Length: 441
Image 1: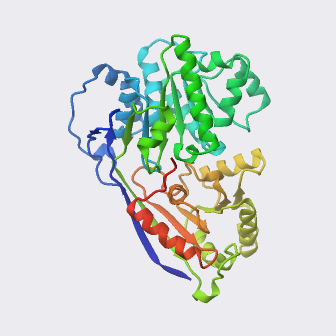
Image 2: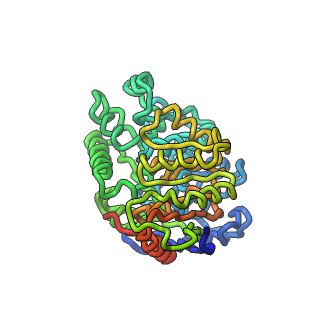
């Protein structure tokens, strides 16, 4: 049933750029899979000793968890400490979240003054509700670890009316939200005063928003907040975008901040992606169009049985529901171990599925794009893509849901739904191998 195991290695050899586009060297990070704490790096005198002191609490917190800050994380912290806007590009699971929030939290701890209690300090925009939950959990871990008396809140379509009413009076110090909710906050009475206090704005998965209506919403919101701060004579918030898949980072940064005076950091990390194609026994049995792939269900069952936890991505909600029912019919004993996730499912059920994935209680989840961006489920060790993902960037993102941690490999199984998708599969493998990602600008 399965074709030979096809191997594509994606090595992201990146660099940092200063605001003028000149290359800035980053120290090597070692081979993929080697913990950075084991890699000997030559100590360099810092040209900004005060910035280094500011980040000592973050470095200590990392050490308490057995981590060593990676060079790209330190570079982002220093750049934010200098008040620079920027863009971070690094593979999935490499530590982008703490790179983007580390400076604000560490600087607050290093100041020794509990200033800022009761005002917004970090505004984090994420395109998915599931992703906002992950980011909030990471932020709470660092806030608690640093001993900050800060609140971490979320504002999405799932937020209760009681919490929204509370946020109308006072925003938390760290707020994770969506582009639509930012504009709701802007339109509220007193919204300008609450948002004008922010020190840093981070736009997560910027590649997913850029070039879309939601991306324009973010560009307008950032411009509006910065103008408020200029009018009030306050320091302007630093703005950073983060992504794993951008073809034109300089253009993407310009779209985000409105000018070229930004700092681009690209992590020097090798990420390996294994692609296995599931094929019928004979090519003539694969239809040419109009099907959803159920003729290859035995191959998908085999993938799930060979792994601890699997995400099965489909392109539509209807396709997800059909595959979920078909898998249950094929394996009735999976009842309670197989779940489904998409945006139309009730909030309580979506949250249960996400928690069960985190805890390793599910063998497989059939899902749509609701789980394909930045969401961190450590037990997931395989991904199945049903049909063409309709983009190289999306394929890389979905593959990255497995092995979502530094040094780990990602594994994705491609299941063509009809014969023409075999051409798309070949094009995807070639594009990923050469690092060719479609531009969004």
